[in-house]
Image 1 (spheres, rainbow, N blue to C red):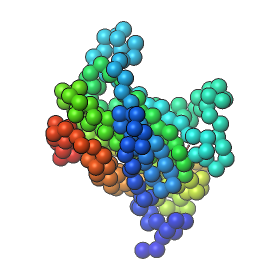
Image 2 (cartoon, rainbow, N blue to C red; image 1 turned 90 degrees about the horizontal axis):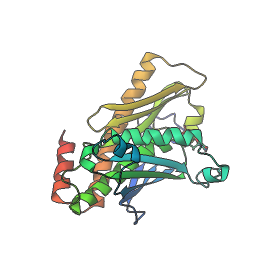
Image 3 (cartoon, protein in one colour; image 1 turned 180 degrees about the vertical axis):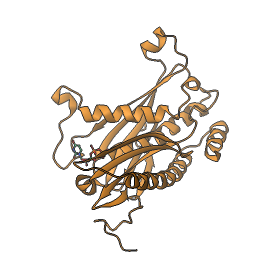
Length: 261
Ligand code: UDP
């Protein structure tokens, strides 16, 4: 089948995906995730404390939160750091809340104990789909960090209930396509970001027409593409987590059980 995509991919084809673990050795878990030319450093660090609101409201368990930023040299034109501009970019704020929601959806916070997990996602190179790469890599960094806690005997049971990943789909030149890069994203009439669990459930769907509308059939086609992409991503995430760690028997068993669902 010939392709009409500028990089020669089939409509339902992901960009080359890779995960390089342990890129930030001081973090409890880290990975450099690549979706084609989009590269994001994702790390998980663990604070042995919970936010004050949890203590005040006597909420059991722990918390997980995320931060996202684009490094100044991640874009073609230098992007000032938020600190230099004195305020957090609205887009970054929206993306980091999305990452936090996605990862909390698959984390049993009670099992974390009185801890806060910080997921930091720093974009090294932006070429479309930085939020989807951040969620997908953030989950790998989280799993590596939790495996470390299990191996250190700090957790009774594994808090990650299953893996979560995210992928974009859109309508480009009238055709639904998977995993848009920047060139496609710029020209897309419709852009969807879909967050899904490995069990095949949706966590969040962000979809909008860019000066365009979309039909129910197009939406179904984009969601079907995202489902296919997500099923492929989870296999790669699983390989990356197992290859990155020498997990304890318990965490391996828990991961295996989660994967078996
Ligand atoms: N982008 C950029 N500068 C910005 C914001 C975005 O160069 O300040 C580029 C970047 O390549 C990014 C793409 O536009 O990946 C699409 O941005 P969008 O806001 O749709 O988020 P993303 O697709 O990265 O999740």
